[in-house]
Amino acid sequence: MQLSLKFLLGSFLLSFAMASTAFAQSLTPTPGLNALPEVEFSRLSQRDPNPLGARALALHPEQWKHAETEHFIYHFSDPFTVTPVSVEAEFHYRVVAKELQREQPAGDTKSHIYIFQTASDWKQFQSVGRLEPWTGGIHSQGSLFIQRSPGFTSGGNLLGHEIAHLILHRYYPDGIPCWLDEGFAQYVSKGARASYLRARNYNARPHASAVDQAKLIPLAELMAMTYPPNDRVETFYDESERLVRFLASSDKASFLTFLDALSRHQPFERALFQNYGNKFMTPAALEEKFRVYAAGSSLQPTDGG
Image 1: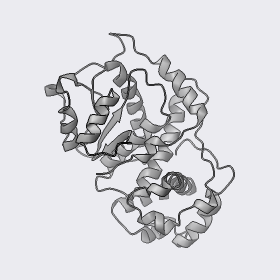
Image 2: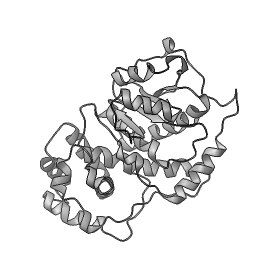
Image 3: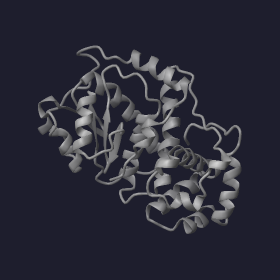
């Protein structure tokens, strides 16, 4: 099970939070007009093969409602909670798909998003799914499980981060390294969130601040990690994002072919040489330049691509 848990407890920029709050308040749907249309479960175009989805729907089955958009299927109890989620999810899909510059996978399946409305329902799901009690959301086998109460007004790029995981799972079903999965999701979701707010007349830009040199994880160690380390989770996410940002800004075309190579489980050193050999002959050369970039007092913000 691929999880993206600790990130959901991380901090986000105050300016984004304020913008998110104002925007979410302006998105409250008008009953009967803006709410996402419900679809009977039997009429959904696809079923979720993830057994965790069946466990979720077995909890209070009479409360679940269902809806569908072009790329996602939603399970929820409150239509006014799911509507803003669906708008943002489709927006992020377009951004991430454009970032990857790949054709849609053959036989593409829709991702399922389960929205728990109350803390008690989420707590019950945590128990049934054997999740850690502090988890605020989980991405598992191409499905997303989150808690959202009516009037939810913040979250920064958290939803976009999880949507990025869903899309990466579609394009790279055999998986990619943990640092790349988390780093790309963080990198692209920051840019997408800023674009999302700018399209709604907010002055928002993605930011990437420096990583403390003393806390940087050696790249060989970072590459070997299969799960964010509990004792260095913030550094793991920050460093992974900065590394993705550094590689993508160095040469976007090379980054995409590098990503494809790692998705085929090609060794990191070989993939690096084949795609960045004219810039970084060895992982040591990459690390030397990356440490300077990561520790910079003011990294250049980007739009996530």
